[in-house]
Amino acid sequence: MEPGGGGTRAVTTTTLIYSLIKNRQFVEAIEIIRALSGKINPIAALSLVGYCCYHLKDFFGAANAYESLCSVSSEPDLHRYRKYQAQCLIQLGYIKGAYELCQLIPLQYQSSLGSLYVAMLRSGKWPRGVLVPKHLENEPEYIYLKAIERFESGDFKAARTISSIVESKRLALDIRYLEAVSNYAMKNYTRGLECMDCSRTARRESLLSEISTVSAASVPEDDDDSGTESKFLRLKMLNLKGAIYYQTGEVSGFKEAVESLRKFDDNKSPVLHHNLALLTVETDAWEALRRWASVADRLPYPALSNMVILCLQNMEYHLAQEVITKYSSAWGLVVRDLREMLEAIVLSYLDPQRGAKVLESKSIQLLSELKAGPKTSVRGPTRDLAIKFKFIPTMMAHSRIFWEKKEFSKIESLFQRSAHFCSGDRVWRINLAHVFYMQDRHRAAARMYREALEEEHEWSGIMRANLCVSYLMSGERRKAEGIIE
Image (tube, rainbow, N blue to C red):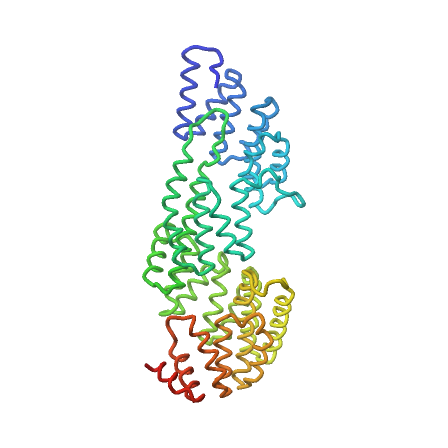
């Protein structure tokens, strides 16, 4: 800022304004700047007003200040003011206007806009039909965004690989989280926890890299919102850590993670209440249902889906239907495939004949989708997900109807038509082994049980017993004795 007239008073006023900004007294700073309108450099005044408004989250006021600066400035300052104005428009949700402003910035300055383009993409309002500029494809933010896209498509290994090559202190926490959640999705739980432990160091480095000095013509990229984002990321980290402990059956670790989440979020997060319900689900199912019901509108998935699953596990089929009906609006926000599968399962209990038709139709649809996949590779990350989380649960629900009628040959037909895609899945093999066992086809049952059991260090009692009986009935006494020992 220029003194605007010289003298002790001007210097004192300048010092006062900067002191107020340094102490984050932005309202007072704006009042003084506006009171001195016409007596101080107008460009410096507008820049400081824009800076203060931005920190006060008055993004409209900040955008107006930077728009005024653009009208009276030229390069090399003009592109910075346009960038700051675009940043304000993104905060206001006006993505098209922000993109148009960025396009006015000369090519030699486009490399500094990576974070703005990524913010536009993340908003979900990126202008239709517009590609991300080629020269941004090597920017850390853009590479990170591609990793997120791979993750969302189910290619967790690629997401982990891409995120690991991103070098950016600014994105350090985000990268560690993406690596951790990718490992979680691939069931590499130990590595997932290691990534989150490393995030503590990354967080310290990230905070150090964000220290900057206030200047008249700048808006720091990381203002108070960075604290909010860091807190949100920390919440996700704690939730992910709890999820890993839950999946691995480490109850004490899960309780510790939930307790940390409770302290960090002061009982506000719907995720916290969801996880507290998980802690009580084994000992007090009704309390778990109550907790999930309290967050059903804010967290339809997985709260509502867990409510329905818990009802099914406790054979409360009519109650499961009541949950779906009562929360019909929120139920529509549950992941579509899971929603349709649970609806069909509930129907199969309340009306087996209709349920069987719905499940048969859904199985045929999913099988067709699998067959329509790439011809060059039978397996892949996306297909593995479709098999594990879509087709097999649907087929098992369909099989249960025939199982209760003891129509085992029909169940075998269901399994055989999906063998090409599912024979590598352990759950598929175990259940086919059960079908063979119930048909007294003990050699086939023994082979399937053995293949499935070789993948586990610990065998369940029923599977060990069935394998032992299958060996005995097949005349393989020594193998049966080996299992007993």
